[in-house]
Length: 459
Image (tube, rainbow, N blue to C red; front, side, top):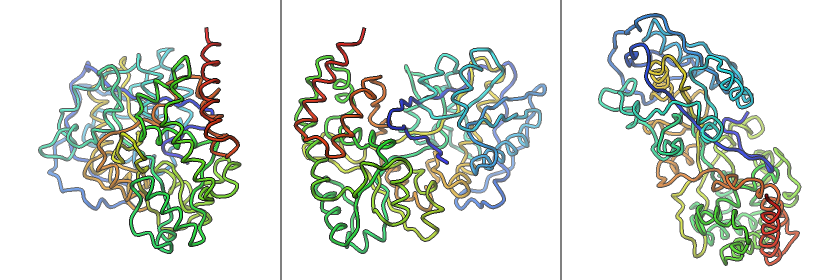
């Protein structure tokens, strides 16, 4: 099951987060977590001094709506964090409602009706896009002591590129606690057999790697066209011109910005992948999860996807599959480097009507603590937000790239912020280009004329 939900082909996914303001009761005192799931042994968590629990003035119950199912590995880790938090704060309890991915359908009506919810979690951008008016800004809490750390604040322990994606109108509206990154995930055995000793960083190196794979008898690239074409388009345009220019193009009422040479170059490069046979046969007909299963079966080498991919296909790939990952390459005449990484996170928000925002944030501190984040990587096999916890196993390479990143890019270069033009024009035309149904020149002409017609029809 996906830990960070990707956008489907005609989907619009918007992300968001939020947290807490003043409390009517005193704040709970930070203490180090006492344990993690029994099958998990944190490998790098430093020993911490015991801290005497401090009780709230009167019993407090925090209501937390979770996007996870109780039986998922993430559920195991969260339950242990609750146990640790309650042990350190004996007059505070956390009542979890396990909604699974249905939280997105449930939380807005519940908030509008005034139902008691102190915290909830889902994609950080979705939180901002759909629930911002219900959220408590959390900025002031970042400088509180981190759980289990003797001299660091919460701010010090979090990946700041990801924290930035939780800010809207200058306010921090949620705390990211389980991140993801979009990379080319690949079969290391295929690279070894093809004699590829270095992951590609430029488009020319990427083409050379594809050529070596094909020569060695491997189909280089696949995807699922109903799910992940958007990130191919978004990543290329980000490298070539940047997300701001992309948004100007998407919302250009004349459509003429699509005639910028960078878009023609992109279209020609996509056609080149097809013409050279680097896109696996049949990819244009792949519907999720067909393409990623091809990678897991060893039939195709590379797939641009999220860091949840190895977990999603682990039953097919098996324990001996050697996963690698590398950032989308830079492109000819492009403006942005490979250290710009498309990434995001599940976030935890505090509702602005919560009577106990201080205690709610105290619980969040346990979720982002080093012990809990270590458990997330080793037990749940998902990335960590804590800067000292390396991403483990099949996502280790992706973690290295994220740690070295200089900028976080929104999903598909924030493509969906442009609205219905995406599903009506942008993605259908890119699908035709990717399937080699239209020439690069025809693609550009279609994008210019059809975009103009779309905007002309809007009231």
